[in-house]
Image: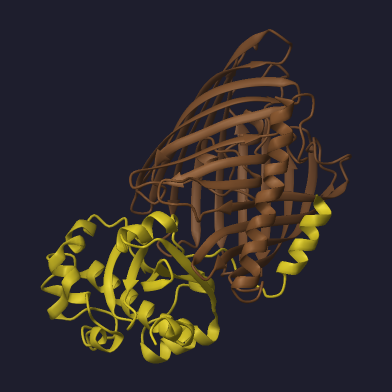
Length: 199
Length: 335
């Protein structure tokens, strides 16, 4: 048995990743079902977030960086209805004063936000940002459209978004930064491969 | 029972073969959707009670592979194989033959078939952590942090077959394994039947119920347990309470109690994690219970390098007269 496993591992060892896969879905099958109730399966596509990706994020979003644990192999899920792609699911985490906030983003095939839900958020203000008013600011928006919601400091959200955040400005900014990085990294790493689902 | 075990072995092999054969040709290279980490660690153990200093070195591959077809994912495989070298380690695990032995050690090595319909459970085959208590949802492989599965249940990992599923409100895992621990076979009619049902593992409050009925190393064990995890901002309070009985001497059942309470705190960046555990065990037939505290810190220096330190002390004096007093330091590098 050990020999079989050794041989299998040698087969596996074609490319290396960094540490543990960090922002992945804990329960992909069930959680994708919530965002795409009509899906029948999901297709995983794993790519590597490395220092060149990190530098591209810093260039596109000055004053921003990726948490060190965000480097490594990450999964984008294609929600499938039989052989048809319904959209994509991508989880990213963002540092906050309540620890890391992990958000599950549902993207449509044009890489616009379709919906989102918190996988892990230990801020007491989480409920405020789960209301439709706040979510609607994000839904249907592309990276460029969402970028207009950033203040000039490149980190905090502007008043258009904060007006919908009802006393949770810090968390609202966390969600916005997470959305921007998600759309940007999805396009940088997966964009080319996803074109086959949106001919 | 013997027929069932033979069937189980055949079913495990068949399912593993089917998943691999049906996925590879239909979706690109074998290296697609593959994560491989080279994982090395050096651990220093200072056992003040036994006046002994030892070291454990491990170097291995930690792999995760998603198998897919054009219609989506079929399942995934986890494989962890480590060359482990002991140096003056006493007492040493059943996996080794001497205090300075070295062996290839298989940690997790399993396939999980996930392509069933909404209600159909995922099927796991291979060598996996027993679905019981806190250990079932917190990965402690290669870490100083531990929830003491091996000590309480007879083994932490075993070869066998399991069913698991995450539903909208609960998740469950139930397994039947062979009780051979590191060997994929039964030894002296060994077996382990265990399971856990709990709330979803990404919630801030998680509660689970577990059971175990097993015969490992000629010891029969029965257990029921409740475990919980509560996270508030960067704090965590975890616990596990297990009751049961052991039969070590053929037809003499002795009651067992086990409680673990943990308080943890992580830094905002999650580079630091501090934890303290209080562990209480009571074995019927022994004049004294055992109370331990375990304090640890983990520092994630960067994405690859991790430094851990832990100290275990026994609060009450055991029958042997020597309280446990163990300090451990580990440096781990993953690439």
